[in-house]
Image (cartoon, rainbow, N blue to C red; front, side):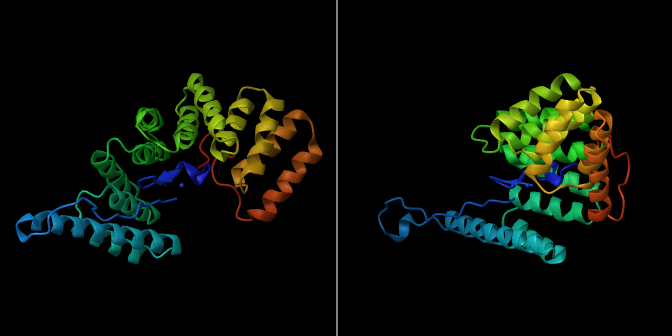
Length: 273
């Protein structure tokens, strides 16, 4: 699927993206500030060692994120492995390992890492959203919806718009039109510029034959984020249906200029990730 790579990684680790397939956010460790009597008898060596290992793991995760952003998958994976050596139950590390593995084209292996992260952090909405997005990207859209619902129900989830947009787009792909608008309009309520939700609504309205509404959502989608090839193709198709051949031609011209390699698959279809 090609639409809005945001299904990606809409939100990854911790506060984490990557919404979608988006952005990693890490909370810096604060020192333990509890008052205690400074005697050797009160020192818990095991607790101290564990705290140091977790701090080291967080540092390796942060380094892995930085390497991923630079596109150095080998370095990123090396940092993730070091993080997991220090903290084998790090959901953040498994999420980054999934991202790196997926970028290498090993999707099934990446899915196992996304799932492991979700098992380790079952109340982390971002992690649940990520696994749902992976399911949707890999032809399991109906199954993904339950994971998005779990993400939305997670206490303290900071990015519900991401899970809602992903859920709506995947409901469309999974042939559940009754749930599409419910999710997508809620997503836009949180974030009127959510490109995933706007693009999915444009497709939904187009397929329903409501071309003027489709045009409005398509234009909002193209204003909200850089265009991908499928968004331009859909825009041209909408204009053709409305009868504005000049506008349709402008979108086709943009498509040829911005994406000279062409558009794979069905440009008007539902799988545009």
